[in-house]
Length: 321
Ligand SMILES: [Zn+2]
Image (cartoon, rainbow, N blue to C red; front, side, top):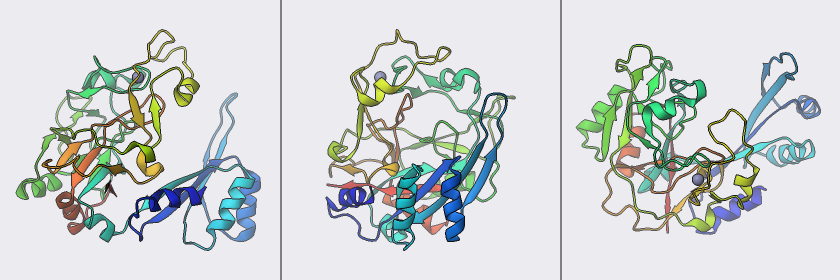
């Protein structure tokens, strides 16, 4: 419901220039794509072949902004054919440079963390002694992430591994600028080649050395409690071979849905007082059995990213209330 999202933003009188992007993405909806064809609306397609009893997927996707005259039509058509839409805010450079603090996440792909079989990277790079197997809250990175090789994109300066979307890798040239500009609160940790165990040469993880205090204003963010009575947690099925078993207990801790799929994130004004330029949120974000703390960056870091026209970092202003 687009009106719902817009009302959510206006609740606190936030950033008027912000636009919403609606990402229409689904598969095997031939009536919907035929209707798009008839209207002359272009979209991307990708076919994923089936095997044995697995049905082939004819995937399609297109993005449309809320101020596009085609949006109301596409919204109604998608609803009619039960096609899925993801909504995310889009910020102008001015929105970003006027925000004192921002959530940062990398959009370019660094490949799967290793070893990927049975999610082996979890115990390889993280201390799991306080991690809840049901909700994923509490894992602490203690060692470098292992990758198959150097991140491939030539254009991007920021990368995230698959499954670990709140981890941010940077190119060495970004590290050099951050160091020259005295960007504080960060340790640079090279990911390792899984095969050789040697440090990769063209990527470094920015690892925040501190976390903020709790400050998320919860009423505008959907929260999930790790409890058998929580609606989302109770829907998670326990696969027979997974590392979660029916015998695992619920930790009762709380996490929040990833904000850029939902609404602007609100923090109380004093949360980041005296904080370094890069830090973790106190809160955990995610859904299902995934949870991670977000990387928060200061206005100074955001300006460096824009000034150098570095690619591959999504910055989302935090609204202080
Ligand atoms: Zn839990």
